[in-house]
Amino acid sequence: MDLVGLSLPLLLVFWQWTTTTGAAVTYWTYTGSVGQSKWADYFPDCGGKAQSPVDVATVQTQYDPSLGPLTPLGYSQHGNKPFSLYNNGHTVVVPLPGWMGLGGLPWQFTAVQMHLHWGNGALEAGGSEHTINGQSSAAELHVVHYNSELYPNMSVAMTQQDGLAVLGVLIETGEEANQAFWNILNYLGRIRHAGQSVSIPAFDVQSLLPSDLGRYLRYNGSLTTPPCFQSVLWTLFTETVKISHTQLMKLETVLYASKEDADRVVMQDNYRTPQPLNDRTILSSFPLGEITAIVIGALCGCVGVAVIIRFIVKTIRTKEPGKDLKQDVALNTTTEPGKKEDPVPPSV
Ligand SMILES: *[C@@H]1O[C@H](CO)[C@@H](O)[C@H](O)[C@H]1NC(C)=O
Ligand SMILES: *[C@@H]1O[C@H](CO)[C@@H](O)[C@H](O)[C@H]1NC(C)=O
Image 1 (cartoon, rainbow, N blue to C red):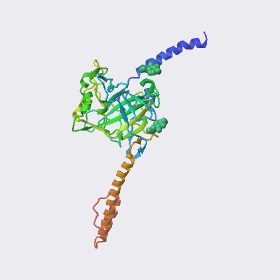
Image 2: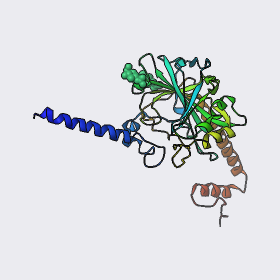
Image 3: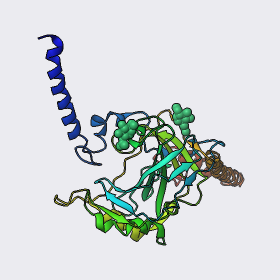
Image 4: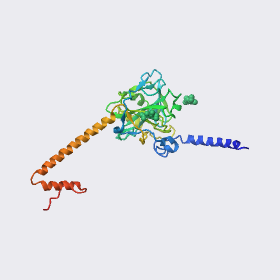
């Protein structure tokens, strides 16, 4: 037997081994032994240099006047065919019809699905994936599209650098219920367990988006779940949408990450923590960085003026006869750490 004859069965065995073990580790969760800190062990891209989500430091964003308004295409022409709602064990997914797409990007993008990320019902706890200046929102909506100008379908596109475009919408809680979100939230009780799906009436997907589609942040990133492919052109709207506290509670308590016949695991905190920005730039479609700089500048200016006024007042006071010495001591003591504010009367 020659070498090739020997190695072929070996190769087959090896191939089988890799595919079976490959299948075993496609299981992942947000916490625990296959939680987000371990994702990169099983899905190498999750340890890449251009991962999502990220924290947006608004002062460091760069205004790009060429970023025009985004146009959802066919989002409101939902037709009569029902949508479906699916619990995939990680989130609730709504597959979107192929006539929905996005205009205003370098290529034509076709809608694939939308899903949500959220927290755990604790007050003030996070839930969004992207954060702004370190601040989380309560939840986040993602509308996923693939580059249909260059690639035949989602599976091919998701592995390509310019394959996907995702819209990110930050969700906060407000006083009033958001009627558009009831189109999803009303049916969660029918898909409590992983693997379940339900048919729901079609609705206007654009009504889930903020009204201002002209102000957004843009950067190159990744899928926020394994396999974390770095194929996403992200658009994060700066206007948030509001849902009521009751609606948020529903999202955070109704679903299970577990299958119907398994021990129940509540689907909560299904968000990835912000990843290092590394050498990426976050662009803004409007002068956000400059505005932030002006606000901070103005605040610093006010503080500066206050400090100057205080100094002048102090200087005038020290000029008052009989107070010179005491004031000097006061000024000296405050510069020494650990000493009390009250100056000890000088023993002259
Ligand atoms: C996507 O397109 C590729 C190439 O045309 C094809 O081989 C594959 O089966 C398609 N996948 C799906 C899910 O349609
Ligand atoms: C994303 O990456 C592409 C290709 O490297 C580049 O041309 C584009 O300017 C990047 N976009 C942003 C927003 O950084």
